[in-house]
Image (tube, rainbow, N blue to C red; front, side):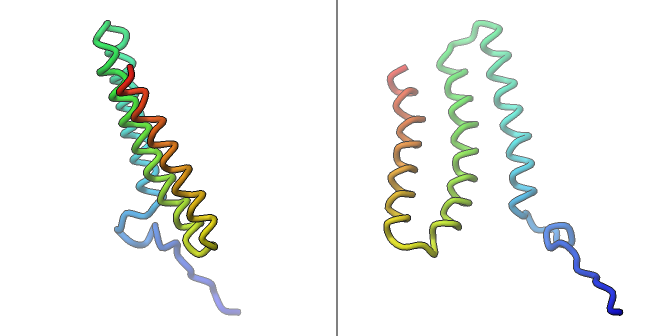
Length: 101
């Protein structure tokens, strides 16, 4: 019987795989939200808190958008159009409240 010695490419290489990037992104976002929470509790401008939260949300959306594009890329054009429409609406949902608020 042949022994299977297949290693996970993310654990055997020193490269930044999607799993590692996702983990460190969650850590960074946790720090941003913690700082925003502390600033909010200290009575610092709500604009500063809103900006920190928007940066955290944007970072998460970037990773999700990359994964979604990997899914949509081989699909027909209608999927790509839907992807870009959704992405534009999400970006507007981040930017418009910052400008208005």
